[in-house]
Image 1 (spheres, helix red, strand yellow):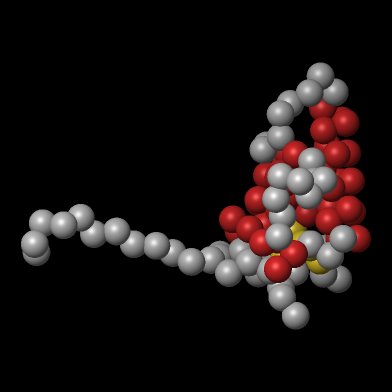
Image 2 (tube, rainbow, N blue to C red; image 1 turned 30 degrees about the vertical axis):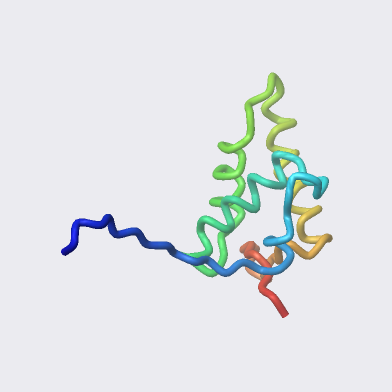
Length: 101
């Protein structure tokens, strides 16, 4: 009521693995695209099926002259991120960000 602008902030809690990701982490664009899609969806759903995650991540990386290579780069990113503990794959084939232990 005093005329000062009102601002707000929403705090999102990330897993320690994802929160530690920075520009020197060795992750490439496909890795970051997968993480971004999963982080963006994490407030809405617990996990994403491959059929949703893959095209959404693919849309975030620059298109190359070889679309098949782009598709494989997302698959390789999914495998790498699972190995490194950033994400998990459920028995039904859904992917999610790993939570802090």
